[in-house]
Length: 148
Image (cartoon, rainbow, N blue to C red; front, side):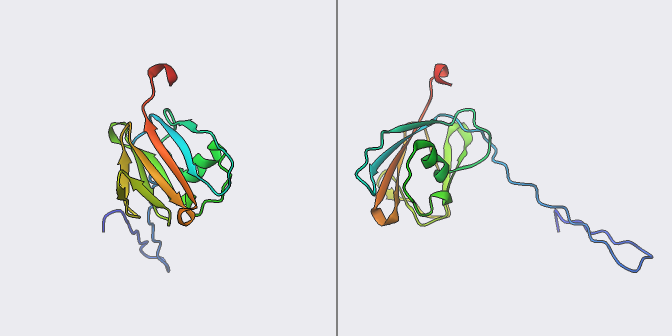
C-alpha cells in the first residue's frame, strides 16, 4: 500500500509500527483579484453598503464566507456560512465549494453541493441563506496593478 510504511523490530517482545502522517492539504495557487460583496436582501431593513475585499497577495490558505461577511460588517447569523470555502485557482480563478445547506446560483444554474466550482474575472454568484431570508451577491473582479 503506497504511503504507509510498517517497521517491525526483530528479537524484541513487541513490534513498532510507524505510519507517516498525511501532510496538510495546501492549495496549489495564491489568491488574486478582489471580491465585491452586495447584500441584496437581509433580515433587517438596515442598509449595508457594498464592500470590496482585496484577495490579491493572500496566502494559499482557504477562506470561508464567514470570514468574508465578518470583514464586510454583515452581522447577520447566516447558517452554514462557514461551509462555503474559497481558494485560489489556476489562471487567476477563484475556486469555491459549498458543503453546507446554503444555495449558490451562478448565472441561471443552481450549483450542486460538495462540488468544486470556479469563478473567472467578471463573473458573479448569488448566495442564498436562511431559506431565502438573506441574499448576497459576490462579484469576482480583477485588480489594476496600481491597486495591488
